[in-house]
Length: 363
Ligand SMILES: [Zn+2]
Image 1: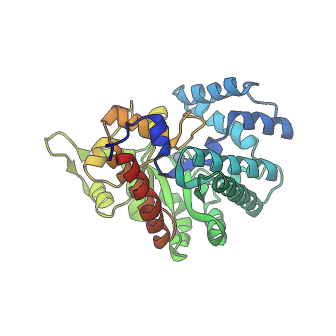
Image 2: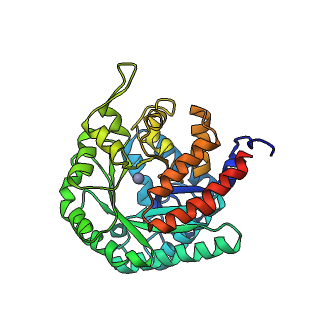
């Protein structure tokens, strides 16, 4: 026994990690964006070499302007409109996550945003899943096995959520694990898509909801109380229902319910700062929520726009809040317990991959 391994980016990369909230169209390699744009004749990219393009994505996401932030996704989805484009992006996503030490990933995207060049919703899903399968196979051959599950997102400002919920159920035994809604929160409450969530519940199918990121508590309340979501995408604004005016933080009805029901919070530290959900990492409620024993999980959201990875997000939390290996292990097990795969499979990854992996690092 040599004691715990020092916490560095390199050692955290060796730790087994699980991510529940990662967007396929937010995680492309800059070089791939350039290649695919050339292949499909897309000439609107703001930079012509990989380094400059990577910087542009990060700066646009950092700018504090929602328009510039959303513009970044116009470029990535523009090059993901063909079978080849979707397949390649999905394959590289699986490989990049595996190289970072992620052993279980749920990667989401909105099929309705990939129909511009004639693919059907089912074809979009089919090619994306094929890319994930190839990426998993290549990662396993390289000695870094990963399981990738796909979540299908509906855009909350659009009217296709029931259709996407049906698509999710149609593909659930073939690599799709669940459903989600995303997009501008204000003005588009989750209850607007109640029929889609009722369809998911009627089919015993999993779903999460982006809520409590830009918009406050009402959005979280609707997501858990009206829609019955199993997890909250971000959910950082649950702090609106926690008063820390006294020495002991007091939880309101919604916060208590979320904690009592063990509803997982898919927290994305860097992204939450970039989108203004919190003002700085130091002010991120991650640590408060972790101490109050909410089921907190660490996530990347958009690796390209935030220039990040699971290991980087964990290192930022370590540097900000002083976490050790056992904390990182707990957050990882929280994520794995909350995964949209069968219970025995979750247990197997926890017992056979995560616990032994952290035991080595703990020394
Ligand atoms: Zn998200």
